[in-house]
Every structure is written in structure tokens, then in C-alpha cells.
Image 1 (cartoon, rainbow, N blue to C red):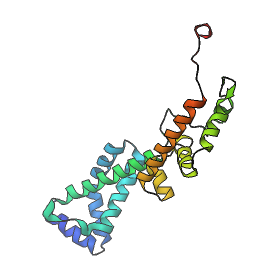
Image 2 (cartoon, one colour; image 1 turned 180 degrees about the vertical axis):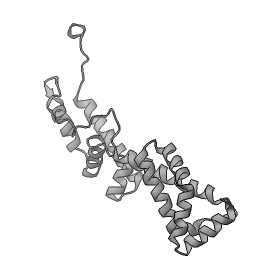
Image 3 (cartoon, rainbow, N blue to C red; image 1 turned 90 degrees about the vertical axis):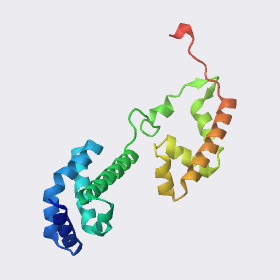
Image 4 (cartoon, rainbow, N blue to C red; image 1 turned 30 degrees about the horizontal axis):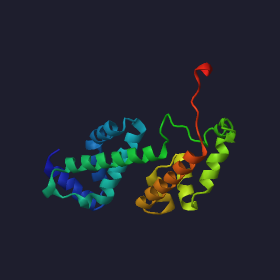
Length: 192
């Protein structure tokens, strides 16, 4: 398709002509899909990004500036950005593999061994309870529920820097409390 044909179709899309959008879709859908698939490595997600790309074309075609480059370059840039956004959202929603959070296996709380006659669970809970509520809540969200700092900032509507600062301060207090209250003894040779 020539650049002149692309511009004519783009003008028609901007005027609300669905047939022009369908023509551009027929011409470029496979290419858009392949770019999305290369970023996501997931067929369904790539199909979703392809659909989102053409919806973006329908709704925001006026943002294309022919002085900055060819239409296809702009369309594939939109595709790549949408695919990266989709990938980042998926990472935020899906817990990382290999991590085990306390809420996924409640027996972790029950099976914690005692050290020096004290209960580690009670010691940890006691240390957590000593923290200011804003620090304790954020630490629980990160370490017991697997939320990212960014997710916490978005859901709690507080700045990301504030989230990081509260978690850092809380963790410093926990390390200090934990270090003075708990001694972890390594297994002796007779136990191995």
C-alpha cells in the first residue's frame, strides 16, 4: 500500500469511516499481531493487543503526524507500546514463580520452630505489632500478599516514594527488633 493510499484511508478513519478502518486492519493486522506476539510470547495476549491497536487507531488516528515518519512505523510503535504495557500489567497481576507467601500456606505459621524456648511466630507478630500502622500494613501487603510497591501506591493512592520509605523504615525496625529477640541456631552435624 502506498503512503498516499494510507493517508487517504487515515483521513477517512478520522472522518468516522469504518470501511477505511477495516481496510487498514486487513492490510496490517498480521504485522501488528506479529509485533505484539514478539513482545508477549502469548497468542491470546497478542490478539488482545492487536485489537487494542486498531481501537487506538480508530480513536486517536489524529495523533499520527506524517512529518515524523511513515504511518506503518507509527502503527507498529503504538503496537509495541501497548504490548509492553500489557506485559507490565500481567507482571503486576501475576505473582512471581518460586515465591511462597504466608497467606498461600497457612501451615508456615503453624510449623515455625521454636528457638531458645521462644515462638518465632509470636516474636514476628510482636515485632510487626510494634510498628506504626502505616508501616506494618505496607510490609504485610508486600511480604504476605506479594503486592509490588507500584501496586500498593496505586491501590492506596499514596506516592510511590512514600510507600518505599515506609517499607524501608519498617524493615529497619523489624531487623533491629528481630536481631535483639531471636537467635537462629544452625543445625549441628549430628542432626544432618
